[in-house]
Amino acid sequence: MLSVIVLSSDGYSECWEPLFMSFKEYFTGIENYELILSTNDKTFSYPGLEIKMITHGLEAAWSKRLKDSLDQAQNDLVLVLVEDFFLRSKMNSKAFHTVVDLMNNEDIDHVRLISYGGKYKTKKSEFKILEKIVKKTKHRFLYLPGFWKKEILKKYLVDFEMPYMAEKMGNLRSKLLKDNFYCISQDYIKNNGQFYHSSASGAIYKGRWKEWVKDFLEKHKLEIDLNKRGLGTKEYNAEMRKKTFKSLLKTPISTSKSLFSIVTLFFQVKLKLKK
Image (cartoon, rainbow, N blue to C red; front, top):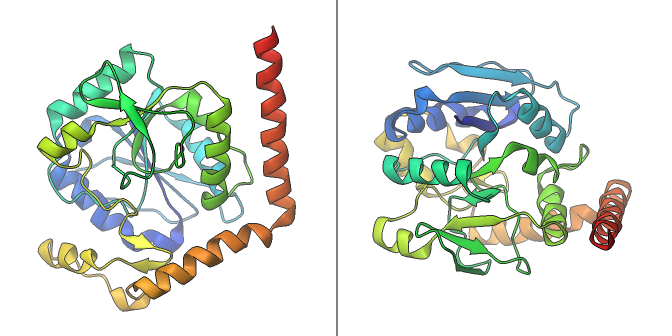
């Protein structure tokens, strides 16, 4: 079976209704899976869906919250996503179950469900619906919606890391470890569209709503005050990308600890190879 984990925080709770509405509308059979919403303190429910709330308080870092949520998930296979990846069209149930079966029966540790604009390299695989993400590529490790074997994902999580650092350091860890990462093939996307139809960076980018959200909310008659966050512009997004990178320099202790964990992992891998 499968657990679906939505990792969120109370500050993004306005995303919960449109996300779970999109699940109910476009994700056939979603009610048959364990649904987990992981956040700080708030609670939430949606008609027709049984949602297990996991709350962590205000102090736990993002990676710690994800690790704790994985520990509480009932199943070894998980679909992990964050709260603003609203589904925008019907999920292909046949393809979905094909990938789940492959994850359960083949040497596949992770399957990324959204194409990320060609920013990572892939190669053909023996599985028609999947391509393999090569080891030496940028963005090998991302928190886009994807399937994970639970115990594999836990290897990449360091308790104190926040999302940006977790992805950057996770990418380095993925180059040292020999886990098999796959993504949906370009042939499938060309013929069928995105497997998980959402924006590659979700509905919110750097704290502001993306333009397409206006039409999405109007179509589904959902009322959210977009003015509270505002809409992102190209100029705003470019400026925030710079600030995000600089944030690593502003947290020298945690950044150093993360880099030290990479060095430690490097020697652990080398020692295992020698044995």
